[in-house]
Length: 207
Image (cartoon, rainbow, N blue to C red):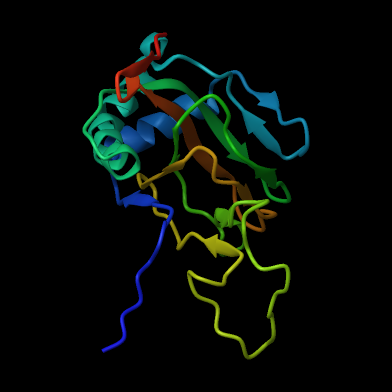
């Protein structure tokens, strides 16, 4: 019998309702009363300042919940249980009409999103096939072509509920299309392992 092997897949972890309703509600209240700054590319997207979770009680509590998930996800990326640190965390407030342009996260290995409010179906997070890859120079896109993990150019995250966590490799490009609904609030973060070892050549990452 024929078998299809999924060679070199890119992992994406979804953890439903990682945040309790009480913590989720407290996070939304704290974020709405925090100092914010405008996004450089969208007048309807706002952020809190990037913070070290150790300096922010709310972020620290969230980071502690994320920790075990990072360890599990790191096994998929590096094949071993490593110690992980959430190095920075910030919030995103997307108003109606706003969007987040295509981007990836530098200087980290795993990035994550925690959804605090419901999202309009039009502005679900979209992940893109890595740019500049080794795909064919020709594409086959028709109305009748079935899109799957081996030929699709993008992946639209299914609807995320408040408290849900998503982890992905930091190099993976993603965007948020124009919001057609109510304010959308998320927490984003970047994480690194304490060290990586390649046959005795060890690189340490320290705060």
